Every structure is written in C-alpha cells, then in structure tokens.
Length: 467
Picture 1 (cartoon, rainbow, N blue to C red):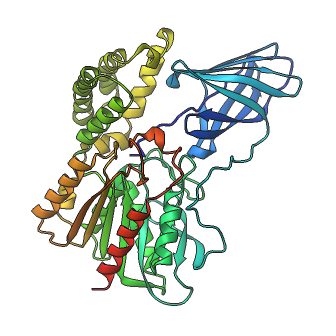
Picture 2: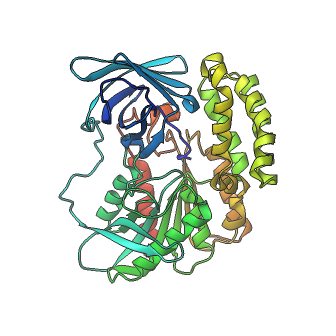
Picture 3: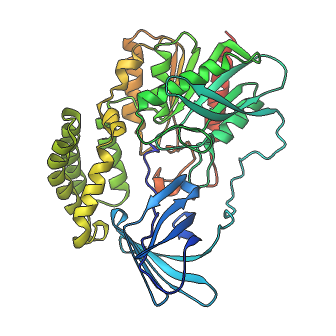
C-alpha cells in the first residue's frame, strides 16, 4: 500500500535569525538512490527568526512542517526529528545554499536556491504524448454526501458513440488522477491503453488533492468509497457510456473500495482488483513489514521479534478508541521496536521521545484504525459480479500468495463463479517488471506498467462486456 510507502526525504525549516533576509521560496533537487526529488521551501520571517514549510511536488506532499533551524553567519542547520534527518548548508555569494542532507547515517548532496526548479527529466517511455488518438475531457462531479467537488479526466475512444467504462481507484495516500508517484503515472498509462482499446476511463484526483476539494487526512477508506459512488453517478449522466458495462479498477487500497461498492450496487458490472488485500488489515501490514524488513537486511530473529511487537500494538489499536489510552499503551511497544533496529536506523537519543510521539500520532488516525480492523473477506463474499484479481509475484506490500488466496476463498464462499485470479511473474506492487520487488526499485525502473498486465486487464474487460 502505497500507498504504504513513505519515501520521505522531506524536510525543513524553523530558522534563527541573521541580518540577511532569506524569506521566500528556496528549491533544490535531492539526489537519493533511484530518484531525484524536487524540494521547495517556503520561508516566512518571524520575530525570532524564520518559520517555514516544505513541499515535495514529486511525492504530492505539501506544507510539511519543520522542527528546528539555526541560521547564523550564512550557515544553515535544519533538523526533522520524525525523519531522523538534518540539513546543513552555507549560503554563498552566488545566493545558493550548498549543503548536505543526512538521514540514518546516509548523506545526500542538496543545494538550495531561490525560486522553483524545473522538474528533472526522467525516462518514462510509456507515458502518452498529446495529441491523443482519442477524446479527452477534464470534468468535475460532486459528492453530495461529503459536500465536496472532485476533479478528473474522462477519456473516450471517440467523441461520439457508446462505450463500456471503468473508474480507476487509487491506493493509499493522497493521489492525483494519474496516481503519480516517484516520477511514474500508472493511471495515465493504464487509461491511455484501455481507451485505445475501446474502453472509456474516468480517473480523478483524490479528495483534498490537486483540483479536488475536501480534506484527505481525516477520511477513512469507507468515506473514500462515497467518492467512487459519486463517480458512478456522474458516468450515468453521460450519453457516451454504456450503463450496463460500468466497471471499477482498484489498486491496493482501491482494491478494498471496489468490492465495497460492487457488493452494494447494481450499477457495477465488474471489478478488477490490482494488488488488493485479501486478508485482514492488521495481518497484511505485519506481513508487509516482515517482507520489507527482510529486504532491507534485518535478520530473521529481529524481523520475528518485530512481528510479535506489531501484533501486540495492532491489538491495542483494534481494541481501544480513546487516544490517551492508545498513546500510553503503545509508547513502550514502539520504543522496544525501535531498539531492535540497527543503530544507524534509530533516531538520536535526545530526539527519541519526539520521534515516538510523532509515530504514535501517525498510526492512531481514524484511517489507520479502520484499515487494521477491516477484513476484506466479509465484503468479497457479497460480490456477485465478475471479478479479475491480479497481483505481482514480487509484490512486498500486498504479498500475492496470502492475498490472492484470501480473495479466492472469499469469492468461493459467497458463491461467485465468475472470477479469475492470476499471479503475474516478476511484477512488483506497481505492476512493474522488477528484480526484487523492493519499494527502493520503483523510481529506478523506467517501465511504469507491465505490458503483460495491461493486456490481461484489457482482454478480460473485452471478454466480460461482450457477453
């Protein structure tokens, strides 16, 4: 789950004063393994120095707060406790901070200069280039229940005609209509391929993201499902859409949402689950952590001990609802877990308490509590429409063996006889052809979406809508 993925080399700023005014935007490119991340600092002068926030446009993150900053005699030092990171730089006569970003004993060059930077060019050969050989329209529709407006793009094989259609549902975290992350736009590539193959596609910015209104951070998966219902209602107003052939394609967390809608709506003709959970949320995250920790080099003994602590912590989150009780119960578990990590991955001793508090706040959100309490099998058993479930063999975030088997058992238990389950060789969580499946590879891989997966999806839809 993606969304599921915190590639946060994000930072900065709360400055101590200097005679020089450094307020305003400062930008740089952080060179990390497999990626180039644009960072934009927004500095505001205050009585005692500066305050600031930071954006990471390539990760869709805005308004990131910073813990502490020193700015003296042109020397800048910034710390971000929750990331166990710091930045040090010196402002030169060329009005550029030349410095280094450090995180967990790893150092990366980072120079900052005034204004915004051009987005670095990354090879993404599958991204379509305008003009498209089909009709594309930017649209908006309303979620009356949530009182928000959602912005998206509807692509049609031709301006005139009537076509089967799919709605794309993104994974966890705030995503724009292209499900953009780490220089990839999976939903843009998927929509382009399907539309060229005669299928209309609606994709939209998540609530509170890009051009959509609303608040993302306070919503749960169940509330995101109401946005999908609104998308279906919008398609029903379009004369170009075959109302008997509207389907849903959900990736990762979106693969939880699609069955929710299908189980309760006659408007959904079919669903496609891409790396969708098939086991309870707490079990999924424990298994995910296990695989990622092993891929990051932790020993089996340490990984197993972390598994035990995670189970204990998630048990508390499932049983309790009072935040003060949760915080008190989780603090000792989080501390014990951190102490099992190599010293290079632990926060500094004088920053550990703040780190623990920030981490506990993150996992005590309504969204996370809903996720770990959710059992997808209970909804999948109620889905009667055709289902295609695909997963990559090397997916470390939604492990294929356990989750595909969970989906299969739930559909069989519910009496659904029209489903296809496939594990695709060598593909990772993003359906890229990969070496190890590690999230560290996502940005390095030029491919955005495996042609094999694209063909599987398109061919299956054509078979279903032709019946």
